Picture 1 (spheres, helix red, strand yellow):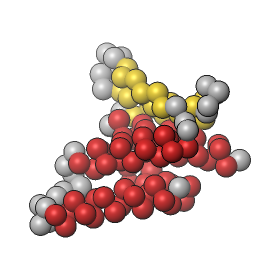
Picture 2 (spheres, one colour; picture 1 turned 120 degrees about the vertical axis):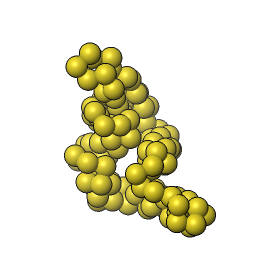
Picture 3 (cartoon, helix red, strand yellow; picture 1 turned 180 degrees about the vertical axis):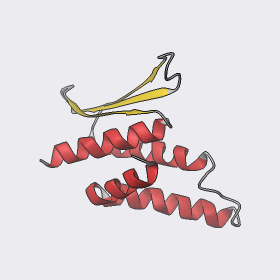
Length: 114
């Protein structure tokens, strides 16, 4: 899934966190007088920070790793566990850490709601 698709999924499962991401992007866009681009690295920072904060607020351990597979030299793995260490969500992102993190968080929240 693309980041855009994952953000739509996030809005469905955790609208508050999705709104936080949107609010921060809007503030930065306004403060930069339109020079802010969603193609820049800022959205990755915003997504990572908001998802990390959402995990902390839910009391969920977050595990991130960088896989050095020669075929995929920049593959990120994100895992979100419950308080007892059971895996709630895991995802692999070949595009960015924020892709893996967002996908794992969406999976974890969906599983949590079941």
